[in-house]
Image (cartoon, rainbow, N blue to C red; front, top):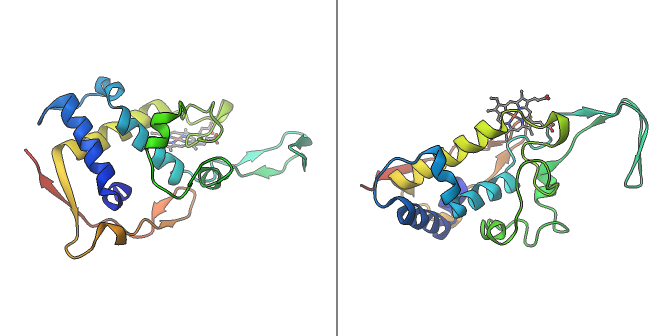
Length: 185
Ligand code: HEM
């Protein structure tokens, strides 16, 4: 919601998609998510820029490993910095730019097979809650955008909206988002 308020033209584009698929009003169901390609792109872009678990959960090497020119000793704790991968200019063009369109053009999923986007991790330790979490995020975001128009506190322009994060095991916003919903029915 913060990135969309910061980039209001992207929010409008998402609301137009929702209106085209559902008309005005109506309840969005889980089975509708596949019809919402731009909303899906927004969720991927958010997982890229603001991964909720920025270092995954630590791994431990079971034996000495040579990997990409590095020696990883047995028992080393490994932190995978997916936050940094999401902002790496060798992987993404214009990485700091919020641009869901990059996922409309590229077929990339969050299921642990595309190493440039691993918000749920990968391999045997991949998040077992992924199917639930991914659905709920799409459903809540779509419902918020379809049921309401949104504005920020009076007097603050979209460009000044604060997207800063606070690091931890899970990533949080540094400051909460004072957004105001306006019923649009
Ligand atoms: C957007 C929401 C969520 C995100 C981004 C997320 C992300 C992650 C990540 C990155 C890991 C570590 C995976 C790895 O190290 O490769 C993880 C592990 C885990 N997640 Fe989630 N998760 C989410 C929601 C959920 C939900 C809803 C549940 C349960 C219903 C859940 C249960 C777990 C469990 C049990 C583990 C530990 C798995 C293990 O180490 O064997 N997560 N999650």
